Amino acid sequence: MATALRRSVKVVMLLLPIVLASAVGYAQGPAMPLFNIGLQGNTIAAGDTSVVLEIFLLLTVLSLAPAILVMLTSFTRIVMVLSLLRQAMGTNQMPPNQILIGLALFLSIFIMTPVWNSINQDALQPYLARSITRELALEKALEPIRRFMLQQTREKDLALFVDIAKAERPKTPAEIPTLVLIPAFIISEIKTAFQIGLLLYVPFLIIDMVVASVLLSMGMMMLPPVMISLPFKLMLFVLADGWYLLAGSLVKSFS
Image (cartoon, rainbow, N blue to C red; front, side):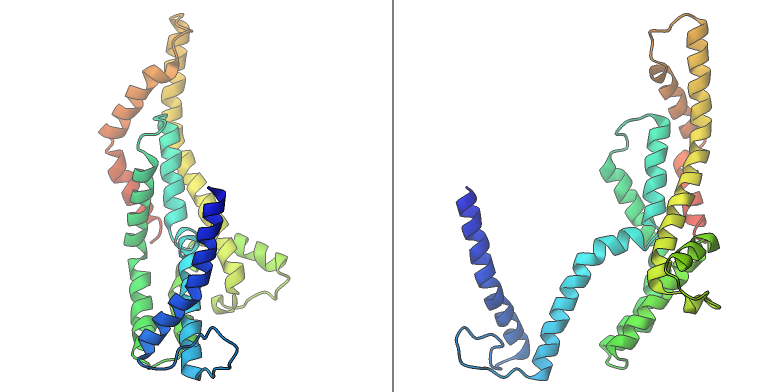
């Protein structure tokens, strides 16, 4: 089985340059192929080289897309709060991870829609229309993301990473390096998620303590308090319309 796997990998590695060459050649029309298996030299036009570089750049961006989605948006705070809520209620795997991640993903899309619309309007569409360069498009695409992160980042966290980077104290938000802003934003989001999770834990913790005290006073020490407190916690969450309050509070916390 291992031998067959190695053979498959070798075949893929041999066919990958040919497939890329065919794709580029098809996109460019009846031009000469960019790759040639042989010893004779081939000249590659500047336009063909830029196409190949764009393909590799696109593959790089796609490989980093999950990290960008998770760490540079509202996804981190939302999914952490939902996980802490499930632990506070003591429902084990209910709701399942797929439900929590899906809810966090669509709430993040809802929250980040103005940012993405700004990127599309100011950066993507002008670049597709060839009215701005690639470098300018990247700068314009980064501006809305930086503005969103700056609104959610604490000054204390920014100062921490500025000191660690031994950079000069920025006088304006535009002078803050992106490599400093990103980790500061991440730890700010984690801290905010823990603060919200603490507030969610308190009412459920009170129910657990009351149920445990009642069972202890009745001499029912062998009965797990979780079995009795779980229905009361679910009833409290349903009567308070918890999902409505939680989703609204999470969305409003980014405004």
